[in-house]
Image 1: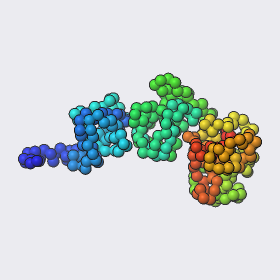
Image 2 (image 1 turned 90 degrees about the horizontal axis):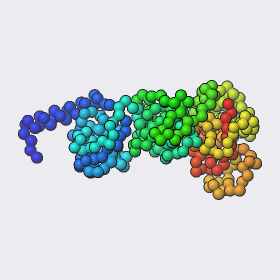
Image 3 (image 1 turned 90 degrees about the vertical axis):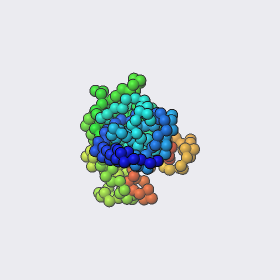
Image 4 (image 1 turned 60 degrees about the vertical axis):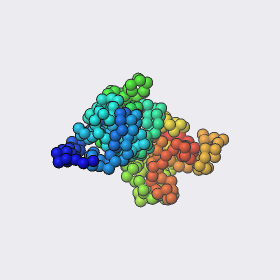
Length: 342
């Protein structure tokens, strides 16, 4: 196709304006769904000179991540690919009005997406690493209310290892620390006293700073150069709460049991609970069939982080102090009970 001089000048001017405005005027927008109205180029950058990823077809559903400027949307297609698309109404029909000034986040690690702000809340699904969500509010110290790319609202842990949040997150609307969903069926999490809640976070923070510290069975309780399981738990509580627990896991289990409020269902655990396990018998659930766990001896313990994750140490091969998942693993099958030491 040939262009006359006037068309060339106009094209160059528009391209330059688009490139400049894409740098100078990003906007914070919440995720919204849209439908492609006619075939349109899906590009790698917000410019008509950017390479074409592919052509989007009429009827495709996409998610608007943000409006970069007056000419371009940053979007995600149904396959999870991110790129840029013209804002012209000839190409996209936005399903809902795009909201501004809402924080967004990228999922850093797989995390439970729940119907209520509690570890006992029903799980909607797991959010996957790389997904983008809109962060609607911080319900309390432990939970964000978020909306996924399908417009579904739910709750996600505020722990830094799960979400990379961009923008300002508003506070929750419930005086009890909970937040109601659109259907009114969510329940609020029951929070401990402020002093206990603060201590829980300090204990976890203290434990996290030892990630990677080498494992040593029967480690010296007077140093922090190596840990076995109970030594690590003990040190985290000393550092974070000034509480000196007994020296071994069985005595620590007795201590927690005497305080009351223990649970044998790991899904009822609270963040910061000390969790206790029996000996390893195998990696499958069937290996633990028929065992009377009420009489099984404790051989391991750790600190529960929420969302089925444990902060603990158990072998040199595992790399020392680490975070493990319980659900569907031998840690779930070996679990005896857990509860608060505070």
